[in-house]
Length: 168
Ligand code: HEC
Image (tube, rainbow, N blue to C red; front, top):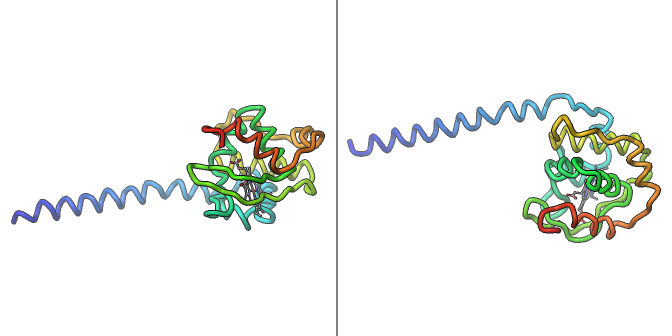
């Protein structure tokens, strides 16, 4: 009978696991809720999913997840400019996101209009990144301001260094 407590412990562990799975279910349900930025969601499907994956979860060794860093960038003026620059001019060079390296080229999307680019960023920042409600949505004017100062993808990557922990 010495094994019974062990079995009970195993059963308890299974229960904890099952409830952890259940507890995570509402998060998934929330992710499946209609996006606040519909136009951004549609443009994301059309232009970004191929690399960043559905829901912006990233593709290992190809493209980074967009589920946490962009929401943080959106909380500072330099970070908001960086988001606009990344879409307008792309990004080129090694970067690290959540401890993982990526080194591939993010293409530029300057051909899309300012309203579409702002909607795309708002979808990433608020629907995917769950930025706090007090963060101001990006406006088409933020995009046009960044259009006025052309960069290349390597410069966009350099500017990123000042925004992320560890500078890479
Ligand atoms: C061809 C693949 C590809 C496509 C398509 C693409 N990206 Fe990227 N994206 C990347 C790569 C690769 C990086 C990292 C670049 C590097 O390593 O310098 C990146 C970086 C980013 C970053 C910066 C992340 C950070 O932490 O600084 C954002 C934001 C972003 N992409 C958003 C988008 C959005 C929005 C779209 C659609 C309009 C898009 N990307 C389309 C490959 C892609």
